[in-house]
Image (cartoon, rainbow, N blue to C red; front, side, top):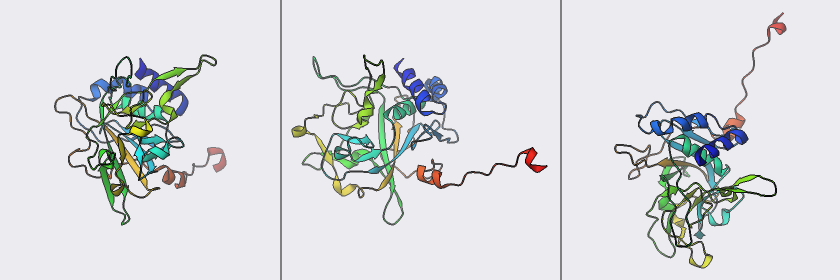
Length: 276
């Protein structure tokens, strides 16, 4: 029910393309061999897409932090850039709906009482793609940009699709997807996270577990493209990107939002009445 709720809400508010129908096909979609790639928009106003054949969600953003302790790997634009490496100008529910549309199933957020219980859900690998100073396309596993505080050991665990939750304002009746506060891809455990780590990781400032691996991260302001790739448990399932040897994905790819805006609109043919 929660999966349908997310997809339906996105459809109503942000014009998601075919998410609900894609979600109905999602369980069988895992069993299908990769077909010709077809990147579909999740929003006309936000740079986020899903690829039902290659089973991944794609989102554009930028580097917002290279040095310091972390609570997030990626946050929503205008929220937690001071403790996140990447900022994305999207809505958290769009990522949730996109993952549902490619067959990923959300689990449950972390619980802290009566005892700690880690977040659960589909395992999600994340890759970052950008162009270096020479214009060459580079790609990295997001885990390699995160290390244990004060050390060199990088993050060893992929994220899980915890799925956050809805909170209802009793005064207005409005339901709010709590990850919209910024908790999109967390490295500290939050009940509100869309993606969280399946291990215990403190959110207390004095005990933050992870920090940015500065030497590996491009300059702040660098435009990046994130690929969210589920690692389905089904035997023989092959992710779109090889985690041991990730290669840049060049084609087909969605058009960046700024390019789409600059592209001239097609000229409509004259109406029949104008020809006479």
